[in-house]
Amino acid sequence: MSIQEVDVTLEELQSLDQDEILRLCKSPVYYELESAFGSIKGSEAAKLLSATCSMHLKPENPKAPFSPKFIMQDRRGLIANDFSKKSLNSLSQFCSFVTIPELKARLADISWVTKAGSVEHAHMAIESYIESAKHLLAVADSWVHPAERIERALRLSCMFRRDSQRPDLFE
Image 1 (spheres, rainbow, N blue to C red):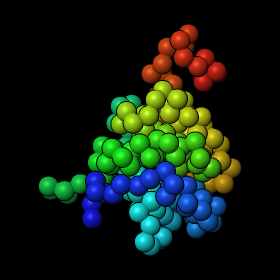
Image 2 (image 1 turned 30 degrees about the vertical axis):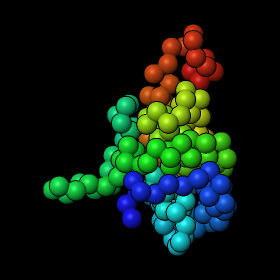
Image 3 (image 1 turned 90 degrees about the vertical axis):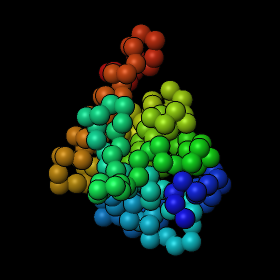
Image 4 (image 1 turned 180 degrees about the horizontal axis):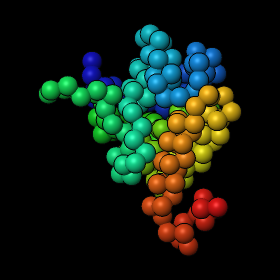
């Protein structure tokens, strides 16, 4: 079954134990989360979240920040627009229940770029990318991942006019 055929509900997403997922990760970055969710067998919700974490973050591309994991001849990995509308809506609703900053940033950003969410999802992504960067700086031995999160947060912030959106995001 392809990811386009997977339709997951909010309840299925909420049934996953996020604390257990974190325990399975060496570091809370998207590729570790992909493996942790992928290790859960028989759960369409875990399969969907693993798929969302399989895309590479490309913060330098403001409108398409997620690239496929691989590109080979006539095949490629997933991109955000590959998910079903129902799954995108469930992911959008699930964002506010996510406790893992890296995952919350990613899901909110996917909701924003696929237009499954609202401007609040962009704001949620900005805040979560910053929170993820702070956490990664505290636990990681590299500055690369935190810098990518900060860059994506800044690029998202720049999409909004200061006076008409949330000025606190520009501080």
